[in-house]
Image (cartoon, rainbow, N blue to C red; front, side, top):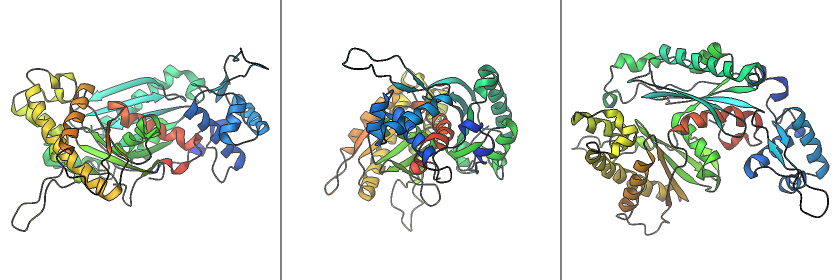
Length: 413
């Protein structure tokens, strides 16, 4: 089972419960937009009393009070215990209700399938995973439908009714880089023409939104990780293949064809008439390259994705990979900074956290070998989400579509 291509999402208005239908658009009016603003304030700042919400949102105290009453009736927020000990009436913090809305995130990867159930405060309630050598379409859809039904059953009818939809993170095309994956052309092209959103909507009865896998991972970091404090950054996610995303002024920039931040296609040298085409960064800085090193040494290639990568006998080959990956990443950072004047670089991946730490160290050393005169060297930071980033980013899509005030944050894909 494996990667997939982009598809359009059905109209969420037709599937979501009446009291949870999309809020805050121009069509639904200012009242619903203000509700979204209040929800977003609570999401960003945590539980707050009404007076503090009024100050942050610049809405009147009366308006905030009315909004909180409506959101409480819809079970999207609830009141916490009063805060005592100050002069005057005790203030009552308002918090998001974890059960208020839920969504499912699905990552279809080249080596694995991940499915997460996310609640309204961003906690992963349930998860399921499946590994494979390549994702066969029918097997993937059956596995997803089975897990979605299990999640609905465990939630029960009341909470299952609050599911907002499914967000899918998948590569734009499975038919590319067949030689690197070592698969037959017929396997890759089995995804051609597959309408993933339509098939999953039919199978599961929920609205589906689809995003490129590394774009979804960038969404997770933007909303739940370091992206909350960095306005402009290049995001890199290292999995079977390396990819990325670009955030400018706190908004995800997809580009004309949805390929902004596609660092895997970055050439690793100059092209000359009398030489072969230079290799792409994807060939040296992806975990598929590390798998190949393990395979050549008759070692289990799956160790590239877990703690074994830094254990004997895998470690010596991981060290070789770290050096070549860091060299490519550092060159990409230098080139990107010349074009975009970035504030930071965020690097994450599907490997263990110790492997990420070593990669960050090697990347900093490789960046030292470049001349930064004339540009400001950006800060390179480790991502905070890890292997869940793509599925988590997918799960955030339905929640933000229905409850965030800013549609351009990352849904303009």
